[in-house]
Image (cartoon, rainbow, N blue to C red):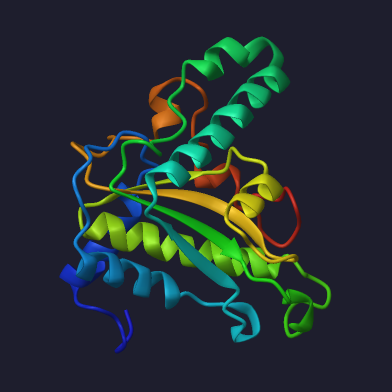
Length: 216
């Protein structure tokens, strides 16, 4: 424990948000109040970024027709993904993979254009722009969970097709379709685990010491 630590209650709340965060697919409609939406987006904007480049851009989708077009892109990729999965295709098609039509708010998280100008921290690891955006999405996810809102990250889409649909400039790239809004309840465990698609692995299997594969 250090002098800079939060109180026990505050620490418990942080760890609870992390443990109970879920990739939500089932939403109950409703609305997200403007001040609440602003609050969770500000949390996303406070994420760390390499070289303070802040590569994230968020597009709020409010037109019903545009939301339907995005749903169409996701559905097309869902079918292509099923075909690529081979023997697990039928099992995959039974999964609910998005809540685009049901969520209160639909956001697209994207990488900005002109990222090649940012060299600090990216000369040997240019993908750190994507890592920075992922941090912003995680901030949004945790803030949403603390506020009682569900959030689902959808990555089943053709990036260029979605960029064209949203009028994005060359060099930019959509990374996530984010479904945000009220839910009836949060899953007690990751949905893919509950559905039997995959099971999470314990940290002990993924933590090494000094050399890759060394667990002692």
